[in-house]
Length: 489
Image 1 (cartoon, helix red, strand yellow):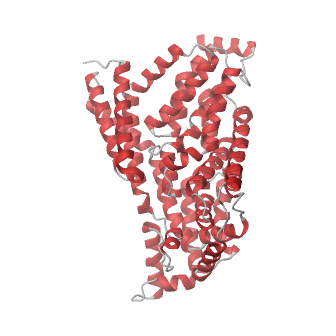
Image 2 (cartoon, one colour):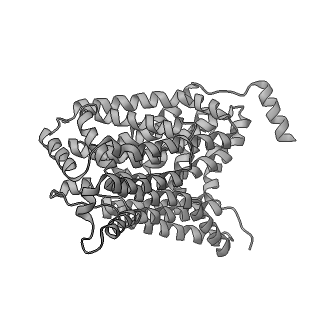
Image 3 (tube, one colour):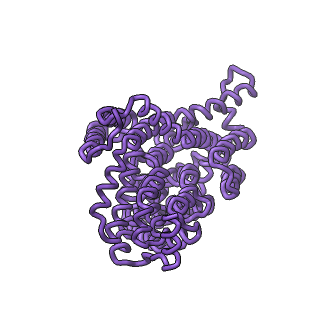
């Protein structure tokens, strides 16, 4: 039996099943939905897609091979997740994160906190080209500062995600910023300049919203609570600027374009070394007294790398604030990523996503509707394949010919891929980016999504630009002729 193309009904069924099951998961399990129920929903939706693939003539061995390949694409992210877990643990033990929290409590004003968090994450992410590293370092500390100031964790997470993805999107060091123009056939710096038209106004609007929220919320800081946290931090950790050296080394490595996995893992190991050098009193209280000191310290650091850092300050709330990390803490996120990638790889292999795009192009008659369709496809790809790289590559390949046929410059497509793909990925709980942010910030995307103002405003502004014809570049006649000749050659 030969493989045949799916019908639109074939393509719709797994998506409807997935939406129904994920909605039921959130309804029944609320904040715990990402700790097993969502994974089961993805497995069940995958099973439905497999049945449709078998009906259409695909062999199980072919589908299984696609699943394995899809999961393998996420292994780089898995390595980063594991190393981030280790880093958070050792940076707690070394005093790096507690020092950031301590200084943040002293410096950041509650009224300006949300806007300042967004701006700070934007600057760091633009400098290093990584939203993930920004969230795992500055973001973790800001969540701690928010808890100390009595501010909303959800709004803070929204500010962190907004800033991190703004900086990531405009940084020439970012993988997605390089991937989008490569797929669309545009020059990198032309792509970045063209993105400024939608990205800068969106970020400014986001900062204004965070400022308004900050000044119109009940953000009067509890000075007694701040003093209590500061005292606990000083009592349990050696607070000093030296504790920030692991952060500076990590940022320097990121700027030098050292790959993310070795950068973060080196940062984790450096945190362990810094704990031995600067937190000797803390280590003395935490090690097993029944073994020699050297062995006790080794055991404690080893445990921190795999299981995270825990401390008993006598205050349950502060214990949660000052504990976390460990590779094992990332295993649930990895399970979610594997489940989502398996589903995405299956529907891609049997042609369900391509069927959606073909149907969409039939209705996309104007430039505005074409760009809107591209953004929608990027978002749906983020939902279905659970990977921001796929949300750039697949729609980019599918729409590139249509943009050329309509005489639209490649930067229009590359910008749209970022507007619809890169920045919507952290809004989806089972997407690799959403799952990562949940694991690092300990706030569900379902809670922070409505406050990730930059990520929400940017796609809408891009659609408005498209329908109004603002900064929609056409190919010059010579370029058009060259492309036509090249396509016929």
